[in-house]
Length: 149
Image (cartoon, rainbow, N blue to C red; front, side, top):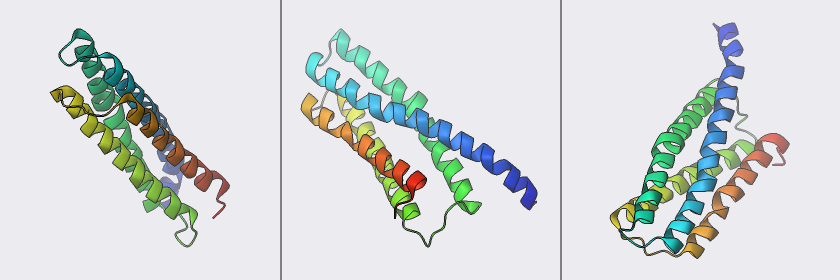
């Protein structure tokens, strides 16, 4: 059984990496859509509806499934002993992933505000928020690859 699990580990790792790439693409793109939605579309306009469709599909068809698959594959690898919990780097990674998930949830709430016509945030807010996934991604990659902690 151990040989089977060891043989499956690279597959879970590959699935995890692919899911993270898809998730990150959405985390980078959705705030940009929010910027343009907030700055260029008036509530109820055709452009408003176009942005709403784009935002919902990005979140529900790409980002949500990718996040779920990334979490499941990551948890499976943790269960297979992928982390040395005595080191600091896995803790940096897991906290960063939890924060990334919180950012995802924040974007979901903002999408619902746009859909209901109640967005009060400016394009500048979304521009600034767009940096959050980038900083978290940098922390995660450095923690996992370089393991400086």
